[in-house]
Length: 75
Image (cartoon, rainbow, N blue to C red; front, side):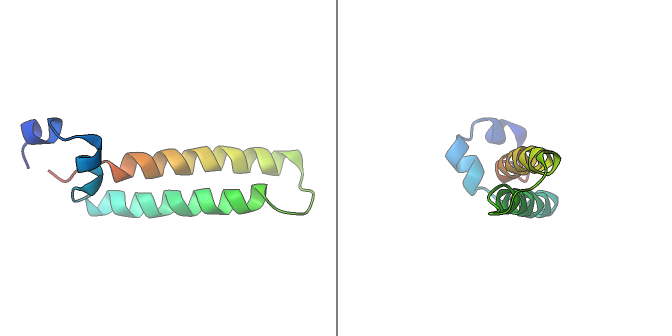
């Protein structure tokens, strides 16, 4: 796919287009980070504040990595 064709894609078309293998791996790692941090944040036991703060940052990082990786197009 040429750069001019990529530039004309809508967000939905970009999400459905083929993704390079590196970004597929990065997306999966981001999803795992987000899931692990969500489990830590929602834990029924009292955890130290630093643990929940780090888990919050990991949730944001995982979500951003997943979103950016998903709309990357192979070209």
